[in-house]
Amino acid sequence: MRLKDKVILVTGSATGIGEAIARRCVAEGARVLIHGLEKDLAATVAKSLDDSAVVHCNDLADPAAPAELVDAAIRAFGRLDGLVNNAAFIPRGNLDTSDPALFDKCMAINARAPMFLIKAALPYLKQARGSVVNIGSVNAYCGEPNLLPYSLSKGALMTLTRNLGDALHREAGVRVNQINPGWVLTANENRVQMSMGKPADWVARLPAEFAPSGGIIAPEQLASAVLFWLSDESRPASGTVMEFDQFPIIGRNPPKELK
Image 1: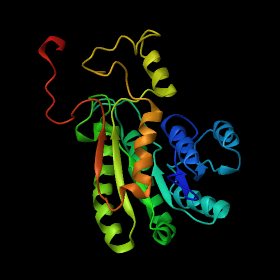
Image 2 (image 1 turned 135 degrees about the horizontal axis):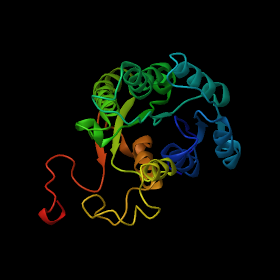
Image 3 (image 1 turned 90 degrees about the horizontal axis):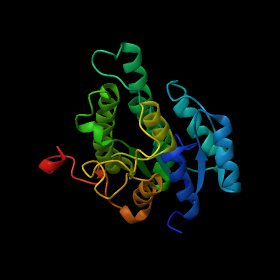
Image 4 (image 1 turned 60 degrees about the horizontal axis):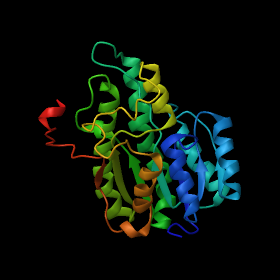
């Protein structure tokens, strides 16, 4: 039980990566706050976790949402040991198609909300000498052409992690680390790819350039990495940004026959 008796708040945990993280936390002895936009989906996840989970749904684009979430966790469990900033807005948009409203929403959900969630949670995380894990993206380094606002927001999140990973560790004993996953096969990602015209077996058809292991990352695999950073096993590391992908992100040189 690597998280025995700990309380973890996981944003965006009604589906996908966040759901996998929440389930893994409970399996390791934690209680969790399930969060999302869809109340029915969040309630289904929480019900399956019995007394180990409660639900609070809100929109992280709302400036009041971070404090509401932390308050809900404290009301339910009386403490907070870990925060996983997982929820994300992932719009398609390049320089031509992105407008200020899209940019502002992306930054609000993907960068502003994590910052103010950490701020709201800090008094409780300080008491617990707790841990924050931010879920970023390899797109933070430059990003795909059609993920411009999203990539910018994940770059901002990475700076937040580096900055607070230093400041909060020294000042409050709270660790802040980040995982930058590559391509993860969630149900939503499958729907997006199908909507873009890919065949039903598109995952099996991916060339080795994109999936050297023969497939892309499963949410449960990513959840295992998050568990390490939430647990005391990763102490005293703070301010670390870890890539979680099948190949090096910087300096990769794909085989010529795959180009």
